Image (cartoon, rainbow, N blue to C red; front, side, top):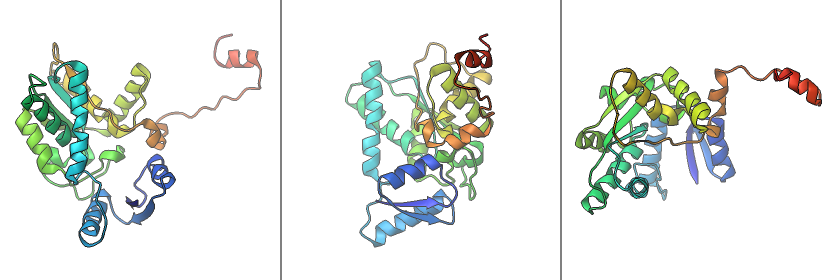
Length: 250
């Protein structure tokens, strides 16, 4: 495998994945969008298969996630919220919902709601972001590969895109972990942040079946999770009484 990575702009957990799988890694002085442009060019001129979501075969695989949701729920949800970076997921899910509806396996199709980080929200503003910036590194993308498909998914479903702040994303990440026991990387919490934003703005989801996709595991980006918390500083001897006192139990 050949992996192009924006220098200094990848979480350590993701770098580790690429290394352990034996990838040939090339660091690029630029951002994700520069890497994608280079990957496309390499696939045109050299015997390289591009496996980013710009590859339609990948989206055909990803769309089966929508099949699983319908199979599990018994029908499509009313609303589906999810993070949007390169926009492959929202495009693929919509393909899947459309196909199941066409086959008579679902009686409805959901409104697709995509949420981007404020510092990387090209689908919200309608303009590429030349220098996208957000702590949610997985959606730090200024010119999504699946832009047209994603816009079609939102328009055809009656959905829309909205932006959430890094603060909202990190708060949603913490809420997911503490309340639901699910540790996700920051970008994966964007859909939850979007739901909380909608509710705060008075939008009601009462009586609706709502699905929120969370994508990457939190261990992919532990550095960001630790930035805003106080690291443990209490050290005790290997003594039960000392541990009980430190924990406020005695």
